[in-house]
Length: 319
Image (tube, rainbow, N blue to C red; front, side, top):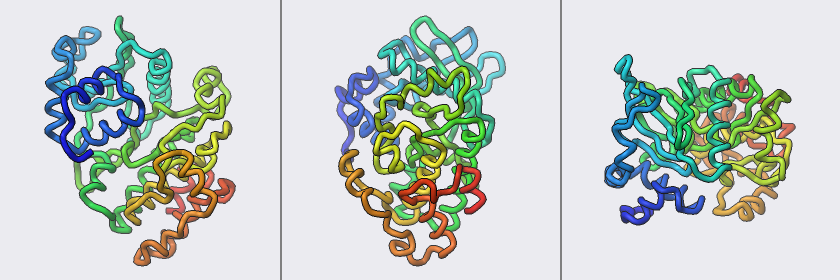
């Protein structure tokens, strides 16, 4: 999807009428295409732009659209500070449940590598999350301009990502969808690494919310992005734990260093077939990467999760 999108496709995206795979492709294109982002801003409902939420948060311009709703740059009318507001209108109950779940989980995590949630708003026509406004780009977009990263930069990003995942694991949360599109490089030198989108996350500790939040995998359905999913996720196993995120972080590092995902495939079935054999050792694909770093990444990509580091914090220490 290299050419600009037509108005009908973008309008379908804004109105959340596209199927999941198509919406994901459109979202990736919008991330990389300034012209389509500008057109998207024109298509955003006029009644939303300029609206003040809860008497405080003034919506200014749309800065992102995804399958879960729209993200706006906004201003705190009390302090003048700029923030981001993720807005989900009334729609499919399962989508609203996922949106509310993300809000609940984000409130549990306090770590600079995870975007903090300031407020959850229950609106007459949906829900909204007020969050920090980030300036920069996703790792996915960054990698379209730079096929491979240096070993040092991949290690730095990997450590930061593992620490952010580890903070979630420490409060009993598994992200389950660690991938380049959910890694944000905040503008700066060096770029600050943030882990985004906890919409597919799951509680792994038994508490009052677990019965609700855990239902997403109760049926054994595979959830996540195939190319970066751990084998147990691809198989749809119910007891996915922190080691699935360890695989995800290592898979992102492999992509940065090798120029491709460790397991490539356009469908769950194709990825499933390729996961019958071990991932090609990183050192074979990128011989100039230090052997010690290759060993850590390779171990974290073990098909047997018992061979991987226990959680994000353990992986960060090994890196």
